[in-house]
Length: 84
Image (cartoon, rainbow, N blue to C red):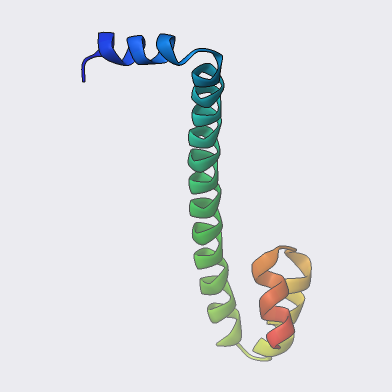
């Protein structure tokens, strides 16, 4: 389909098509935002778990890891501190 036919369908559809177009654009924006958010959460979780692994290998690692989790609030620190 070329652009002229798509525009013709949009115009022929009336007001409902405009509402659907707006909702489509909102949905795409939400999907892109969620993708970036989840990507940043995964990245943060990966670096947090590496920090915890390093702390646990040190002397008195469990106490230091608990303290580190309390100092750095977030979803990963909450999950790990419950596990401790």
